Amino acid sequence: MFTASDLAAIDATLADTDRMLVEQYPGNTAARQPVHTVYTPADTYTPDFVAQWGETAQKAVADHGGIAGLTAELGVADDLVNDVAERVSEKLATEPIEDLRLDFEDGYGNRGDDVEDRDVLAAASAVTQAAADGKAPAFIGIRFKCFERPTRARGLRTLHLFLGTLIEQGGLPDGLVLTLPKVSTVAQVEAMAYACGRLEDAHGLAQGRLRFEVQVETPQLIVAGDGTLPVAQLLHRAGGRVSALHYGTYDYSASLGIAAAYQSMEHPAADFAKQVMQVAVAGTGVRLSDGSTNVIPVGGSEQVLAAWKLHARLVRRSLERGFYQGWDLHPAQLPSRFIASYAFYREGFAAAAERLRDYVHHTASGFMDEPATAMALAGFMHRGVSCGAITEAEVVEHAALTTTQLAELAFPSRATRPQ
Image (cartoon, rainbow, N blue to C red; front, side, top):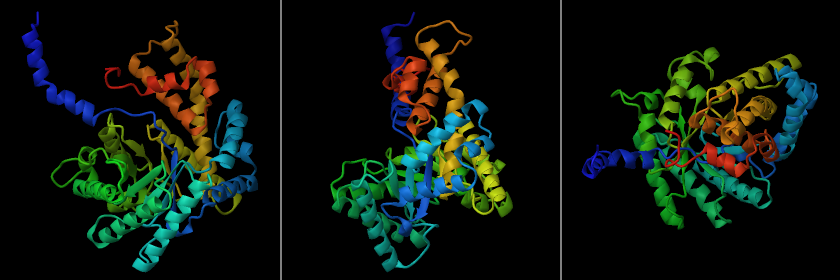
C-alpha cells in the first residue's frame, strides 16, 4: 500500500525523532554502578582509609553479636542467613567501599584558601598513592563547593588543583567521579560542562573525559518558577557529561521546611522528587542514587541494632523502587548496606535465573515473559554480579548464560532493544 515515496516522506518527518532517540536516549550500559557512595571530609583521607573503614565495620559487627546474628536480625530468610553472612563478611574484608567521595563541601566547610589549597594537594597525592598501592576503591573523586556566587571560584579552584595534581603525579584514575552539589538551575550544569571542557583543553585530555554527578538538593531543580522541570532538561544540555543524579536528603528536605525529626529518605516529599528524577533519566543512561540516613549505628546495643534495622529497611526500600545506589556516612553502616543489598539479590536470584533461562532457551514455563521483562531480569542479575552478591559461575549454572550474554540481554543497543 505504501510506496517508496510514502516511506521516504514518513522517514523525513521522523528524522528528528530518530536522531533524538539515538543521541539523548541511548539506554543504559553494562558499566558497573556502585551500590553506595561513602562521603568523608577530604582532609581525613589517607591511602589506608578503605581498609580502616572495613576493619571498623567488622569490629562493630563483632561487638554486637557477629555477622550471622546481625543478618538474621535484619530479617533475612532463614535459608539465606549463612549464605548472605559469609558473602558480606568477605565483602567487608576485601571491598568495604565501592565508591568514595572526598568532600570539600558541607562535610569540610570553609577553612580559608590556604588551608583548602593544601588539603586539595594532599588529597590528590593520597589518591595517587592509594591507586599505585592497589588500595583505592573502584570509584573515587571529590565533591567541591557549589556554583552559587559565594563559593563558585573556590569550587573551581579546588577542582582545578585536584585534577592537575592527579595528572602530574600519574594520571586520572579510571574510576574518577566528580560531584557538583546544590544545583538549582540548568545554567549551573552548563557552566560545569564548560569548565570540564576548559580543563580537558588545559591538560590535553580527550574531549568528554571529564563527567560529573549532579546532586539534587534544591526544589528549584525539580520544578522551576516557570513550571518546567530543570532536572530533565539538564541531562540534555551538558554534552553527555552528566553521569548521575544523586538525591540530597537533608538539604532538599530543609528547603521545603520539613522539621528535622521528619527529614527522611522515605518522606513523601522525597519520593516525589525521586520519582521526577527517575522519569527524567529513563533511557538516558544516567544513573540514580538515593540519599542517606543520619541515624548512625553507635552507642549501646539496642541503639546500634535499631539504627542497623532502619538503615537496612531504607536500603531495601530504595532497591525495590529502582534506586540501586545510596550514601553511607559511617563505617558501621557498611554491614547493613551490604546485608540488605545481598539479601535483595540472593532472594530474587533463583526465580530470575530460571525465568531468564526459560526465555532464552524457549522452554515452556509458568511465565510468558516479553523481551522487556527479560531485559529487566538480566539487569537485576547483572547488578547482583557487579556487587558480589551473585557469582559468574552461578549465572552459568542456573541461567545457562555467560556474563557476556547476560550483559547483552540487560543492555541491548537501541537497534535491538525491546520496543
